[in-house]
Amino acid sequence: MAEQERQALLSAIPAVFKARVKGVSIEFEERPSKALIAHGVDPDALSVTEREAQQIVVFLTNLHDRHGAQPGEFRAEVRRVMVRELADWAGTDCDF
Image (cartoon, rainbow, N blue to C red; front, side, top):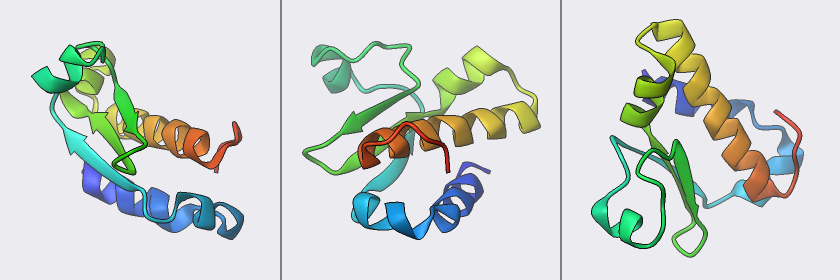
């Protein structure tokens, strides 16, 4: 499910933003790792941007815990978090 959302979002990015987010990977993990937490990431974070690694990490269990088990709601929240992170990476606050 999350992979389908990732692919749908990436294919829907307008051309003007594609160059700005080229090379950025979106990864999914259950929760922040101990290493991330040790570096100051909140254990309840929904996502984190790792600019040096050119990576956005979405924490699925944290999203599920916060937004419930309804598949439609969960899918929409995964998409919202990815859009927010990609827009931030691209230097804009608009949704695409």
